[in-house]
Length: 413
View 1 (cartoon, rainbow, N blue to C red):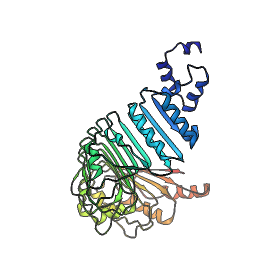
View 2: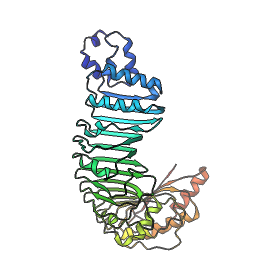
View 3: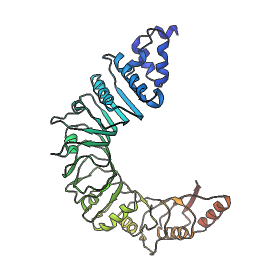
View 4: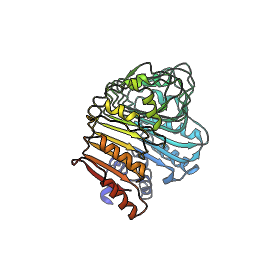
């Protein structure tokens, strides 16, 4: 203990930053010198599961911020699952901005919506900003986030109505690399949603409401990863996805939807996942727009409906001359038609994630092994209620006719 007391406050604070908050706080009883040292950690991660919720959390956060003075806070994180008064959250955000915070992560359940302070949108030190739990915001006329690289917004409502807030935000983030937007709607105006950024590398859009048909633009020449779940709008006026490596799509179309430009923009993708049967139906309905996917080496399709139609798969295989791995996420629902996949189909690895051993699944497996001549490995994740069922599934799978070069691996859940 004497050796530790001989260290400077800066070094002790650095050591405390590696401890869980509860343990770091307990050091305050050691001596008068140690009473508030825990509050000078550059990384403050506060969780109501550790310090308690309600008034206890409010008192604790107020005490930590009060004694920290002008000490810099690099990371400030609050996760609260118990409802608290919203005014305190806004006040805490303003306070940590004065400490030069670089990473700000607020995930709370509040009694009412939390207002995002205007100071957030002109902060020069923010590198990572994550807001989740029902925030309302009004973007000021002047926005500047010169250091921001990661932006995560979950269930945020913007009051601005005379322009696309997403475009406004992105234009103010010259070094932004990762953007995530989740929730129902972003704002009220009926305008084109403009995702435009020269630096953006990872984009996730998860919209759950699916009632908004307004246009969407993707001007993201550096984007490498796209996860996109939404109702397909009337039009994608401009799509630039030249650097796209991986795309995970969950798209739902309406009568006025037109994903043509988005589908064409996928031509350079290397890993593609169609994560719902609605997405497969969308691609099939607009199959004329599917480009040659010369770089695609891994394709995943989700068969989450008994009415899944396999009619898209032959088209995708024909358009993917270098495809190596095909993943089917979901049961092998029966295909009512016998489909040809082409003798030149290059797929070497077939992965089935949910195999139950029914007759129709076995017939579909036979069809795949017959029509995919280059297969070298079939990996099956199966489910069975007992050892007898495992034995039956294994026996019939291994009896399926296949090339001598094709190996079947079975793993039971």
